[in-house]
Image 1 (cartoon, rainbow, N blue to C red):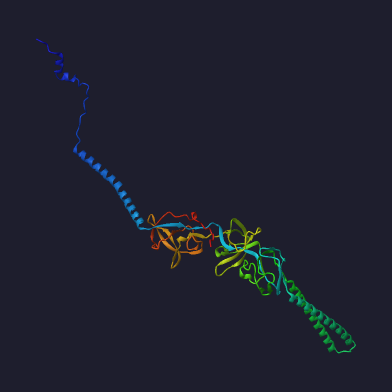
Image 2: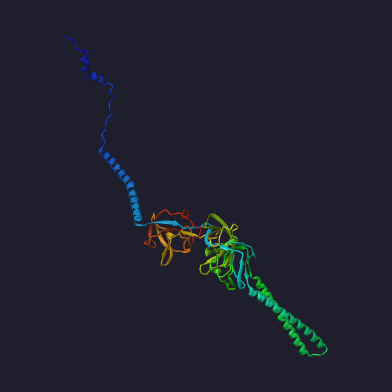
Length: 443
């Protein structure tokens, strides 16, 4: 009988043989206990509460912010957008530029004092003459005859005076001897006094005619340039003026010297008159330096000084008449030229500057629209303020009252904007970045 196979015996054994098979290396799993239904319900409820709390903490604030942003956007969309500018003061050191006309320091029209004909003239237009130089000679034969006649009359009166003196001496001797009466002596004294007075009058007449004869030589009253010659040889001259004009009848003063023989101007120093506005009148003082520019001489400036002022404002224009003297040693400046004088001076109270396009002209006067902050974020309210313009420079104006330094005003205000309206404000412009006049007149 065959014996059983040992390998088959081991696989077909009982539990002991199974414990020692190829499952020997596998570990045993822990026991599993199923969750009860009560604990499962509690966990689900806690998770639901946490989820609700998270939703409340995130959605509600976001909804409030969204609502506020929508309200703000609606307010911005309904309010018009405006551009603003900040009011500021001009710099303390100001420059005032004013127009003027170059004029000679001295100018005179030369007239004749005697009647006659021009014998010769010695100075034409453009001639530089010294003081006392003979400009022309006048032939006046009638005056010579008057001088001779006056001298002859003087000789007669002197002879009569000598006779009256001799008669008086004789009658005084007779009066001492009581040969004549006192009345007769008094008559001789009166005759002597009359002869003495007649002689004095004749002498004065001769001196007058001799002095008049000196005016036959027309002389320059001061050193200068001849700007007009209104006579020629043979021209009839009277005390009322020259009978004809031949050269330079239009002097630098126009027709002011019509009928004159010559016109002379002193141009080594010239001057210009400026009309200073009332705002700057108190700042103008003598010796204040002025820079002069002339349109006809480009690239060159001249230095002048304030010589004097009228010390009174013109009642019509409210301006101060100011004279500025300018050295002109090379005679580059010609009388009649248009010039512009720039005055540099400090101002105690600099004026407020504002762009002209911020001004509103209404029935109530000149106004500006001032921006004031409001409670709504991103918007502001506007209000009208009446202002007073001190001076208009074209693109910029000076404000003397109505608003203060640092105020914000609307540029180019819309006619539909009303007082108290809500607006959206853009970033304000800096007026100092634009063309700042700083007191310069462009009139």
